[in-house]
Length: 496
Ligand SMILES: [Zn+2]
Image (cartoon, rainbow, N blue to C red; front, top):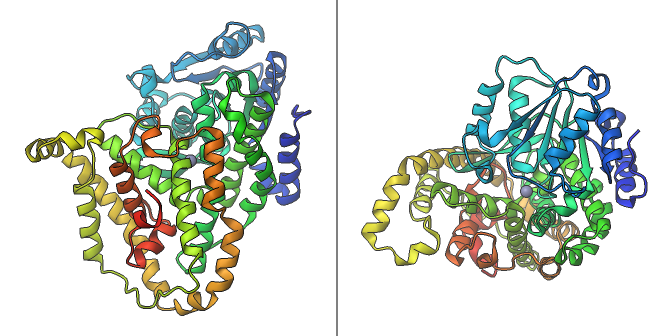
């Protein structure tokens, strides 16, 4: 039995899943345990390991950053390992930063990291796996298990901060040549939402997780738009129905994120919402419901930093800021009484390749340092990055051309969209909140409202470039594409 008593949001999670999903779909979802103390953790571990409880061994992964468990003076690694010792569970602790030969803070989810971990585990028989950590380590381990086909032994995740939706989703976001790519991955069997450790996490991390969730107020519009334009092949509102009951909680807790420790009711409710967000994407079979235009802006900012070897800003913080740009762009779109796409002639492949190439060659890779560089210094700096840029250019172009071929097909029948625009517009307004409301949530929660306030200061020039590059970040359509197809500039539709 899972012990989710006393939490209205976890009860809502269970009842919403029961009413919206078939039994078969429910069986494939991560089981979520709300855990408030060590005894409850022991019971939950018992349930999650099942028959493996006494005949383990288990592998316990952490990233090497010492995190306070919120219980006595123990770190979460010590607390969990002590629990295993008491229960006579044999285990092996694996510090992923040692496996990857990097500093603990430099562990990030990439195709390369998965390859290294795969080689490390190759030849071992599958055993139960526990991850104690945040989104990056969860994605690395999740995808490695998928590739090694370790799919029938229990896989448990204990998030140490409410940062991303990785803990319950069947997807991993992995970096390849500076480009973030979403891959179908192994599902997490059980997630332990251990509130003492979550409440002890740095406030910026909790706030970032909140920021990632704000995408749900805009991203659905992108999916609906793509479907109505004939670019997306399918659309359904299941994920919307799963997330919508939590709208109140999401709005209600914005103001709780300016104090530390974050009040326990906010931690519990946000855990349930993050859990549902991962599940909503998994049962939809795609990340589309919670990842649209705003995520492409965030990925473009990451691309600039990864290519030039600079540290990344918090994912969710960027997503929140970019959600504002998306909401502003939707406000503009929805102010249009009519839309003329017939006279917007699609570009040819060669023109597109040139645009992507030029945007990548002229990108502000040097951050604030950009302004002090002479032409020669910039050229020298760019030379070091050229092989990475060329690889990324190929990836971005390949993906974009897939989307472009759908657009070419859709364009031949575009008058239907133009005629239906009044009703499409009306429905979009139900799926997407206004920029004013988005701004209020960002302000109340203390998230960044301008690029300069991100955890890694970002110049307005970098941000504007990321917004402009958003159409070319991936194969999936968003509002940024529609703006581009209208021969307009996404950076002009948002107030940046
Ligand atoms: Zn995200």
